[in-house]
Length: 403
Image (cartoon, rainbow, N blue to C red; front, side, top):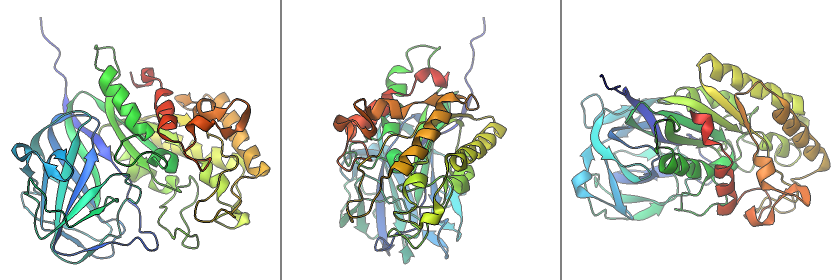
């Protein structure tokens, strides 16, 4: 009797979406080491990292890189520390508007663990490519401290400059990409807590999905949410956020979803900002109809299916009384915008075009007033969830979808 042998392949275990910088948020590094902390989903015996300079106009020099299992704070387990190479070299030159992937590194990566990726930046480097809402404390040291198990912290940061992905070798498993806006990026959740809804989904898959052979075939979960992101339009430089809210989901879908390692499933949770922004952060002439959003969804669907990737669509949760904390005079909610949201959700619930529908709206809305969030799930701005709300979203995703 022959035993089945599972194929080993690269699977995305962590990722974040690269963003151009926002006004006032531009970071510059020179002869410094970035120790970037990431919380992985899937585990495996080999690891590799992705470094992006996609929004950089000049080449990015990496003078050295290490990866290790994080112990506490900025410190790592010295026994797990591994030097990272790029085409056999200990240094890398990331071209302007380009990216690099490291060589494989032998390292036992446990599921649902923290890794520390250390990058030494020897020359002046402006972090024009970064991820703003990391909700994770990372660390900076003077000089080359990539191999230091006890990291000499000079300052902390709450962004992810340059690092956009971590892959592991996994036994026959696939990965899931969650793409969306701030409600996927985790805005409103506890910093350093890993309470975004994709984190909760990863925990469910890895804690319960490995019980038997009939469980889910995916356990790598990558969060490609960007605060303020829209389905149809890029972030305009005229908003208070500059162009830092990123390219539209339509524009970044191939790079941020289809090109990920081992991706077999994608969960789309986008559209609320297409409805909210016009008349609030962007001109009223940019107002969208429900049909505009549906047409955008169909473009994502066609591209995913062309790559034989299963695609799941989520309903848009409510936002009545939502406000922008930096300017509470801005009117975010209107009855007209609510009508568009309801029309989109009605279509999502009735369509059979997608591989499945996940009803985040039904989970989060207040039954006594369905146009607003349930208070126990509200982070306070009536738009973003708190930890309990994100946990409810994670629990609303049927694990049977990933068989």
